[in-house]
Image 1: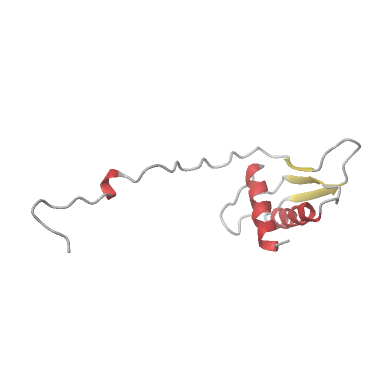
Image 2 (image 1 turned 120 degrees about the horizontal axis):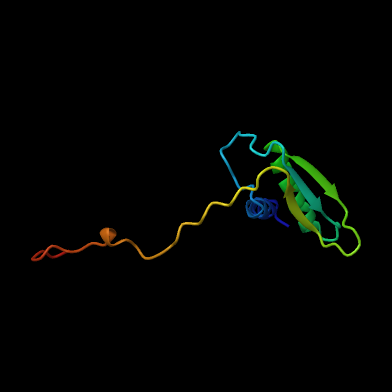
Length: 110
């Protein structure tokens, strides 16, 4: 299990929950709580949840970790405060026409 890989997954999980990366050093999660429901059956998931908890705590949020109730699956959710929408992805398309080179008539490239 790679710690860096777990950190990447923890950051991705937080972004999907609406608490994506913001300006460094800001306490932008004050008043919000990260609820982690973990049965500790999967050590990798536990590691991802632990890293996510550290990130949220560093950004000013509260953390609650509890065992799942009967029939409940392990999950994470953010409680309190207005939900933030994740930033839209930039579309990856063809290269712009301005970037393509055209040769000048009558010249040869060596």
